Image (cartoon, rainbow, N blue to C red; front, side):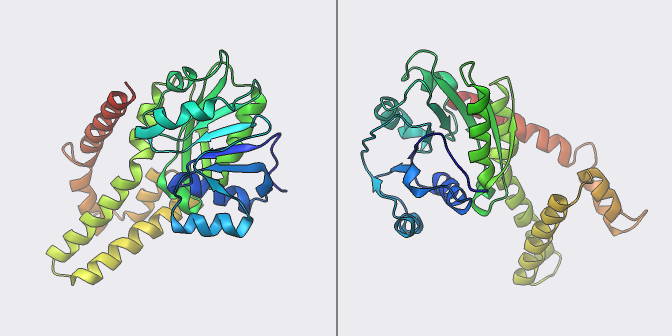
Amino acid sequence: MALKLPGPLLLAGAGNMGGALLAGWLERGLDPKMIVVQDPGPPPAMVALLAKYGIASQPTVTMERAPAVILAAVKPQVMDQVFPTLAKFAGPETVTLSVAAGKTLAGFEKYLAAKSAVVRSIPNTPASVGRGITVCVANAHVTTAQRALCQLLLEAVGAVGWVEDEALIDVATAVSGSGPAYVFLLAEALAEAGRKAGLPADLAAQLARWTVAGSGELLHRSDLPAAQLRQNVTSPNGTTYAALEVLMAETGLQPLMDEAIAAATRRSRELAS
């Protein structure tokens, strides 16, 4: 069933995240005529996609009717420059959906009419391959229909979760928004440990890449919790058991991850303020 909207969608920013969402919507059958793109210089891949579907990307846009959705996907550091010109297009039925880190609900509300609907969301980079996870929070003026519409749009690139307390967005940013970098670091560290133990560097890198990617796919496909999947790999007193005794020690991975998430959460709150 094709993706349908109650009105036009204004996409501000066709970069990595905005572009991934746009590609997902078009793959799901959204009518290109419903999409207006504001971006002075989209990357080459997006230029090709826009051309394929006959969508113009404009540095400034005009709209004949209020959009159902304004999706703000420009970089956080220029959002305060770009969004005020977009806010004038918002009507009473428009929901503003942000995928920009560090920009609060109040940060958007100040440019909009009173009681405007705003949803703040934090996606992550696996959205580019349809395996993202996005966490959202809505202000008090978002209707049930608008919430469902935002969910539908974000599901084009992966799973979607909601929180009611905006402060939890900072924690979600630390866990899933920044999380892909932690996984890539794991692959780096695993490869380097293999190299130091004697493997050729290219083979160690290949083993680490395929192990991390394959384990992620197994976790994705399985209904079992991560702890059970870990236990399934671990034979009593075997090689995995020996390694996990190190990683799961009191000074092992968990306290280090706790500290990392706390640091990222603090930084997210600093950026938002």
